[in-house]
Amino acid sequence: MKIFMIPPNSLILYDLVERFGHQPLSLMGELREHVVKPEIESPPLNLSQEDIMNGLKYAGIEVPSGVRGRLGIWGPMVDEAEAAIIMHDMPYTFGCVGCHRTNLMLTYMVRRKKIPILEVHYPKTDEEAKVMVTKIKAFLEGLK
Image: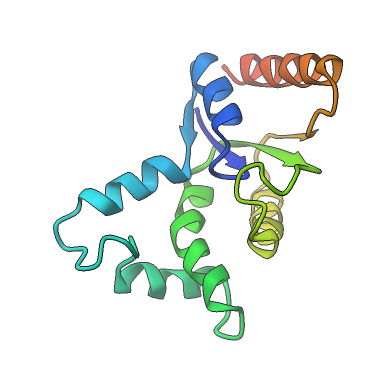
């Protein structure tokens, strides 16, 4: 199954999803496709005019351009998702928490989609980390 993760660039969640036999829908994979496309004229930006226009499907014109640009990339991944894992209470340095508004919008979009969702909290201890991995494992194995 295709699993969307919030935050979308979490290597921890990516690894767990992949280990348990699912396809992680990740920012890294999506941006790789953008970087290797010859039609992208400014690779550091990794966005095409089409991506920016696509962002309008997910957020209105009054939404900040950074949020709209991110949604132009991540929105189609949410559309493609068959299940999702949402992590809450991450430290600022985990994933792309720096764009909190985008993460809030992604969470809303995922919940509205009515797909299986697992919501976990960022672990603060080794014991909490073991519990989190166990929950994720059970969720992913239950999807097969």
